[in-house]
Length: 459
Image (cartoon, rainbow, N blue to C red):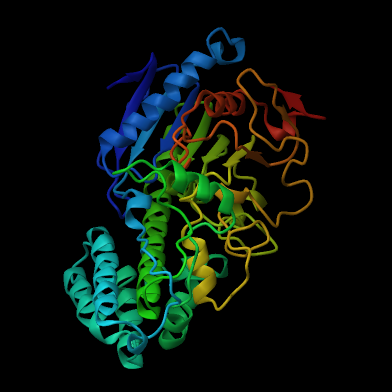
């Protein structure tokens, strides 16, 4: 595939350390390059299916649009070794009883709990392929029979999981309070395990949506998967499930950041020498890829960034919360608008955050809400920002042909529960290719620079 409905397209592949396997060819005369990154897709075909759907809609909704017609656009599709986020996150069936220790469970329930723990470990295992990881996975599984009441085994489980995620401590600079990664890697292991035994709803901030998804799920599919679960089988089963989910999130977070920093950032600096403007688009963990690229690149030609149901903290840009990507705002790395789509109908993007709140010892009821330190940006938009950094006027995703009034704000939280929707009633996380999102991206592409807008501009 060398074009998407007439727009030149070139894939560029990276390994998990950000090593680039090829260089994209940009047609002469190109004015704008859109660099787009998938998040949860685990192969090139799935990623390019997303790109094709999104930018086919982009072409359709901008047909006859003179500002777009005045630009010569090319697309660079980032391909990086990811895994499907919702398939990595394990959930257990409750028994209807409160979670308890091994002595309070029947023999049948103890067996069921052990199977559930091994399933959680096995589900995450394919993501870990560094030297020694197979042995670490085997060690975790060998600890399962002892985890219910043995504090020494619980401590060992947390320590081995830490080694699995970050064997050389090479990601110490990414450990932050905003997702409790600092606590996970540096806290007392037995306390972390104990805190993780608490029940965690998968997306407790949206119970009505969860119930709707559960009621509309079809036999044999996973549309209703990201629901609150109720009581789990046992305290150990809770802990292992929560810790493996959180460990999976941390691994994906680190990988996305590494690809963005080491791979995509140098790429866009090179591309900027050939074009007038660079635009970044990222879905799910791809939102972290492109944001890390913006943070670590040096070009002044980054014009817009569109984060589509991005999987990182809603405090990631916050000065008050010392967000990991605060430099993007302080250094004004993007000259035009930063769009952040967000919806409570996205049940996957906030899945790791309730687990994060649990290991930190936070027992607050509003898991994942805007006031929760551990909420996701794809669920709530950018939070805890300084005055005027986030637009108060433009606060939702509009229909195609809407006029977007871009002011001097850097971030636009485009809340949407109408267009980014799974028509089957399930998780909306992947439904970011719709015409309304494509139209918003196009308006960001043709927007003016903030320093050239005066009182504001519309597109």
